[in-house]
Structures are given as C-alpha cells and as structure tokens.
Length: 333
Image (cartoon, rainbow, N blue to C red; front, top):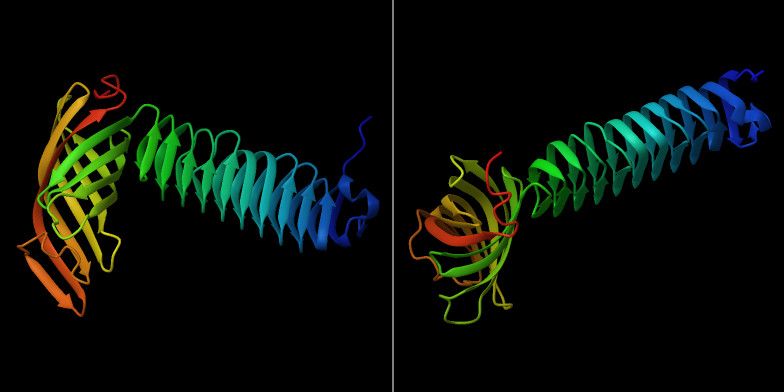
C-alpha cells in the first residue's frame, strides 16, 4: 500500500536537512516554506521562499521566490521569481521571471528573463528575454537578439533576428521564415546612394539590411549601411506596395556623421521571382561637421545648431530585387 503524503502547514529552515521537516523534508507537501539558504520539499501549494534556492521534487502551486534558483521536477502553476534561474521539467502555467534563464518542458502564460527563455515544447502567450527566446509554437516573442520558434500566432520582435517555420508578423533586421520571402535587391536613390540589400520576412512584414556606396560624393569615398523594417500591402499576385522605415549611415571614416531616416512608399510589380519597385520617400537627415552636406539641395524644413544640421526633404528611390526562393513563395495563399 502506498505511503500517505506527509503534509505541513509551515516549513521553516536554514538548509536541508536543518529545517522543521528534518531529513524527511522531501516527502512533505507544504502550504508555506521559508528557508534562509535552500529548501527541499515534495510539493508546495502556497508560498515558498528561499535565500538561495527552492528544490521541489514534484509540483508547485502558488508563489515561489528564490535569490538564485527555483527547481521543480514536475509542473508548476502560479508565479516563479528567481534572481538567476528557473527550471521546471514539465509544464509551467502562469508567470516565470528570472534574472538570467528560464527553462521548462512547456509553458502557458508569460516568461521573462534577462538572458534567455528556453521551452522544449509549446510556449504560452508571451516570451520576453534580453538575448534568446526558443520554443515550438508560441503566441508572441520579444527579444534583444534572437527568437526561434515553429509556429508564431502573434508577433515576433527582435533587435536582430527571428527564425520560424511560420510567422506572419516578424519585426527584426533579419527574419528567416520557412514559408516567407528572402530577396536580394539593388537600388538607387536621389542622392545616387546605391545599395545592395537583403530583405527577409513573411508575406506581410520583413526586415532590411543593406550596404552600399554613394556615387555622387566627389570629396572622398562614402560608404553606406542601412537597416529597417517593411510591410507588404498586396493587391494582386503581380502588384503590391512595399512600405518601409529605414535608417542609413553614410561614412568616410573621418570626422562627422551623416544619418538619414526614411519613409518609403514603393509600388512594386512582380514578374516571377523578379520584382521592380520605385516610389517617393520622405527623409530626415542629421549631419554633423558638414559631412556630405551637398547631397541634397532642397529641403522643406531645415535647422542648424552649432556643428549640426537637421533637415526634412522628399526624395525618390527605385530598384530591382530577386526572390531567393524562386516563385514558389511569391504568390498569395
């Protein structure tokens, strides 16, 4: 006959086995636990607090907080807070917050970590991390560097890269989406800045990373680096409008800076894997030390403050791009 589970309303201690439940602490289910360093229990059903670590051999419900880590060998439901690390072997329901890392088998709810959230199965509503989010299916991921998922039902937001099998709304510089688009383009604008750009994302949103050279600057070599995001507005299989927000730096690696932020509205015509695009732009420039200040002659607004020049003007850009996946992902589904 199975042994009855031991129960305790209050479990107080220093570090296992120095506690009110002694050496059999791992057999107890507790409503409230408080340990100066680390506590061990079978289950927690209310509140578990530890200066360093909570170790729970089965499941936890309610609230767990530890200065360093929480370890749950089955499942949890409620709130987990750790200064460094939360680990749940199976499912998490609720909220996980860690200074560095959350790991679980699956998750339903919200995970937030200073470095990474890693879920072996499906994640919940939201993952937020400083460097990495990884899961199977998930609703929304927000990260400083890299998101990885299978199917994303909501939005992926990344400071650099998103990777997914399916993600309709990836917001990042590079987006590797299995059922999406990846293109290489060559474009030129009214200042004769010529760019080779990599555009990647879904059929609705994409990221932009480009490098280039200005052909109109006679004083010195002027190199370009551009990053941004864009959205497709499709009207037919052959016709769509690409709308983009970009930031570009021009540099000759000497004193001064040239920054341009642009809003582009570019009608585009697709012919198989090839797309032609062109349209107007609205631009904001910030120039210091007079760098490349002769590229634009006419501004709708401008201001000079010390060695800095600010201006707004209308421009134009156009180019051609090739879908690296060919024609199989170019049509609307």
